Picture 1 (cartoon, rainbow, N blue to C red):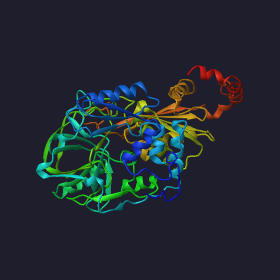
Picture 2: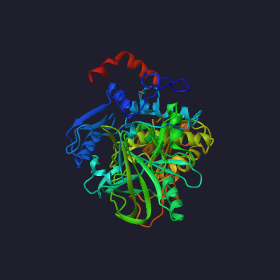
Picture 3: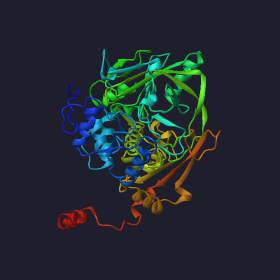
Picture 4: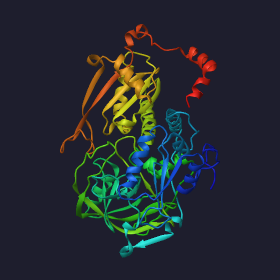
Length: 492
């Protein structure tokens, strides 16, 4: 494999991006970022072990590789939390190794200033075709599909997945991360929220009375998951978006049934059609909000006619739930960088940082720090952050703080809210905003939610008269650290 076309060498010291998930895993292990666990059962244990680890180590959780899963061939594995640390995100994106989560946000945002998409390259074959099950031989339960939460409606093969679809009008190929439940050996339910790109594409096929071709990758390069699971503009291929971050194109092969482009080095891909004439109950499922916000519903099914897989495949899993979860940190980082890029492109000056708080699942509680320069600057920041493409869907709170507040530090943010915000004057409400079925605060049939815009900055008109902060100055902190910093080492 060649080096990235822009000459970047930030792949954890390597001179080229990783080839596939397996090489990514090798590099992550060398960084000490992977925990291998043997003998964990697919039935509840896998989800509960992931929850236990991510709640115990929220600041620097490892990726978890579940091996020797009872009841399945020894070589079959499940990988959870691939991108859920600052170092693994940097490794995945080809960014410098960070000291702080905001370092990754800044590096990602800086790249977006000169970002160029790189379309995928079609090749004739790849490891994904090492094993092909066709039609009557398809058996999805031959894969270690996890049953994640006790109240789930079934086993979900699609959590850290790529749902690959082609727009019938334009030929645009879209990759989205949507949940997919296994109904039986060859039938899957794919749930897509209203307004999402995959849902719009499916409706075009149904409008013409046709089934919707679809392929779902459930084991792949984590970089593809980052692009598929975040806001990418309508009409932009996530392959090209991820390729731009990679620096070289992704290699794709055409699927047997519908010539859909699937990753040539994918671990597992299933292919078939979502049909307009069959529905089955789907859900419930414990989601990223930390709730079973959506009830059981009738939804269209996908009839699976092909399973492509590598020898000893690695399934990718992104178990949602009460934060922190398997992918909540990576969601916060990417979402923060996208909002930062959106507001600066809209003309907002003086942005010192953006952070989507992990307790809000990377969507519900977003903070923007600014260097106040004029009256109304804080309100402008709030409105742009709330209305940006990356920050609009299913938001709840947007908070603006001064640049002396670290937006990643929830303690600092709450302190600023408690001391610099007068609720009567500094909180505004936006009504009839874009929500979705996963919003736990909505009743069935509700279509909108509201946003609280919280100005937690010093009042601009008298910010220079605001009481000074009771803490050491930066100069005094540096002097103390130089003389007495050795005490911190004794704390471990």
